[in-house]
Image 1: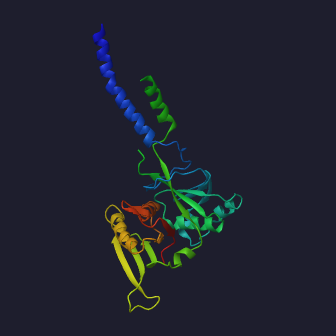
Image 2: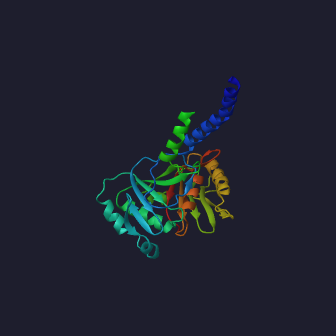
Image 3: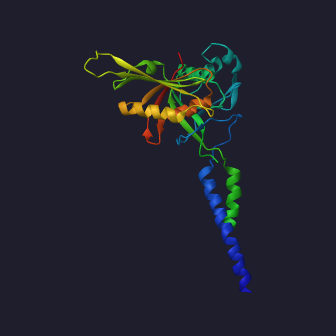
Amino acid sequence: MRAPERADAATLAPLVDVLTLVLVALLLGFSTDPPLPVALELPRSTSTSEVARSLALDLTPGALHLQGHRIAGMAWYLDHDEDLVDELYGALQRLPRERVLLRMDAAVPYRLVRKVLFTLQQAGFEDVTLVAESRSSL
Amino acid sequence: MSLLLLLLPLLLVTTSAQKRVGLDLKVSSGEGLSVPEMGALERLTLQITADGLEVRAALRRSDVTASAGDTEQRKVALPHGPTGPDLAGLQAALRDLKRLDPARERIALQPTDTVPAGVLVAVLDAVRGDRAGPLFPQPLLGSAP
């Protein structure tokens, strides 16, 4: 009667090892960051600095979102020389000065990034964190 | 065993495979881009264009024939390869300049308007440091002239 039990234990041991390895990989590689409110592909970075929660700006080639709410279309700013993003400047005036997390799509041209940074600076928001996806992500 | 089987689906449901990291920037008026520093490197800029990278350094001359304010201009052009910017070449060029002025921490980045944010972040990573240690960990963002 004992022989089959030993055989079961012998079969389970590698499975437990594999599950433990998968668990460790998940704990190391996964994060508890909430999903992004806007569909964008973040640039990839080798940085290891964690991102603390703060005021979030999401920039795609088509639109700018503040705290998940669309505040401006960016097509006009892409075609025109105006550096100040008026809609963003107006919205920032009602908010306390704090660090801004700028989450931008990897394909966004620097022309738009520059205008958003200029507007932040004009509105008195001088501390900015560019958010990226870690290269160690699974 | 049962604990593992419980933990695995729980982790898969409550976590995400995308780990986010941050690169801190100080957004101030463009003054920092033009202020010369006191070390051997008076000015250090990196232009990022659709075709490649270009490092420009103004080195203070210290030989006996030099007058005050004399600088030697150095330029390193690194065309993009098939996979994007030549980050290894950039880091090698910056490492050479870092040896001349180890205390310097700032470099002015001047991307052109068409440079994608993905390339900008890759370059920001590269100028901050390489395997040998920190390079210029306080990059300043401007725009190409």
